[in-house]
Image (cartoon, rainbow, N blue to C red; front, side, top):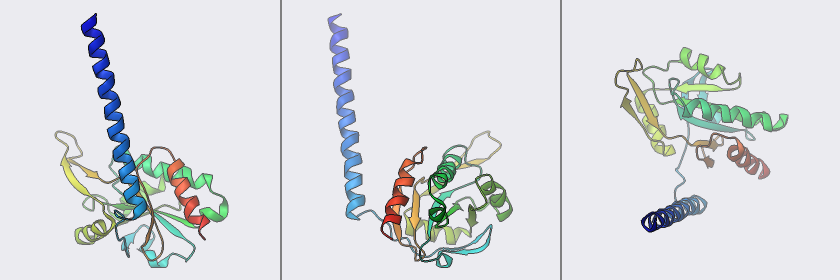
Length: 202
């Protein structure tokens, strides 16, 4: 019994230490974001899309794009993230919704052609745009937006491979300036709050 109590106390202590370490890391990451140290440069995006050629420059001055980098055969993060964008749009009033252009940029150009993207983003709403480009175009955009992706062998799966990728959402203006970077969340509160902050600034 004494050994068990000591073990329980040790486990609880280690758990508390782990929580403190995680909290400190999250705080440091947040501080770095707020201080601007980790904000990638962003910049222009011009790609083939489900609505013809897409360019950030075509956005109105009061509009923002919500960018997500993913792929259509993603089993979890991608549909959840796009569902979060859809849920967020329902929480905005009509004038705010008109200011938001949701875009998924595929990081799987081998399988995600425009027809496939059109079918996929159509599940989330008519305002959603799917975009893709050459490997060179995507690598250039990914570097400027701090996005990572790589193929991962799917073993015996019929998919052949999956794609490990960053899951942040980027709120950007028509010049490609990143106004907010929202880390992955399965619920819409963080994105809704970020958009409200952007809109409150004009």
